[in-house]
Length: 289
Image (cartoon, rainbow, N blue to C red; front, side, top):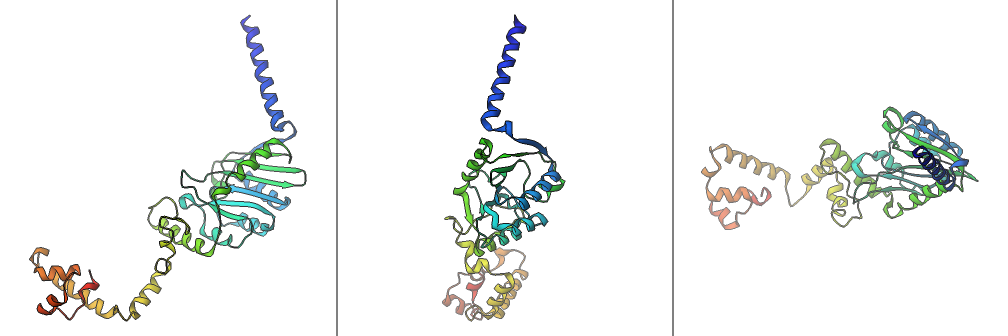
């Protein structure tokens, strides 16, 4: 009796699985498991062969497959690379400027982390869903696992993937030169010294404008040149002031041994009358403070 009940349950489970497969349209599809290198090989073929390209991926690189993808940018319906974690190449972001239907995405709650690749042409479709990012590691040396699905474009599985891709629309942003430049500066800073996890984009309320100000966008070389020619902040006199403060520090064992007037001068709070009275008016002490 127990064996009979067990057999019935097994048959019921099989029937449930069969209905699920039929509901997804998987009985008419070819499904294969891909590792990283096979994923790269299949993506290369799909980018070439299909007319409609839709991608949403957490991270992207600027390598040979990216070259092929950009050569086929006229086929983009929606291609989106995430910026969370500074793992997407700024060179790739730069290439997306002015590219129709190319976007970046950044999630503030959690991170943007999908790996969805969907390709359509006429009545057929192919998709790759799995762990592989559009990166050198994800498409070569990493241990990845992706499902490759091929079948009729009207299959429910492809419709589900399409709905998932559309769900990211609220996160997508077009790439401008300002955005690309800002991301590159933050990317370089994050690579030198790991700090903030995610970039701040130019249109964000908290801090975005500060990162696109003329001062923030200026290179150190340009800043130094501007400082040297500023008529109100004489570069040579600033250096003389720094040397004077260096002399004051070297003249005593402890900071407390300096006079109160000297303390105020170093802090940049020395008033004009006090400066003259103390014979320190050869410097603009406010520059250091």
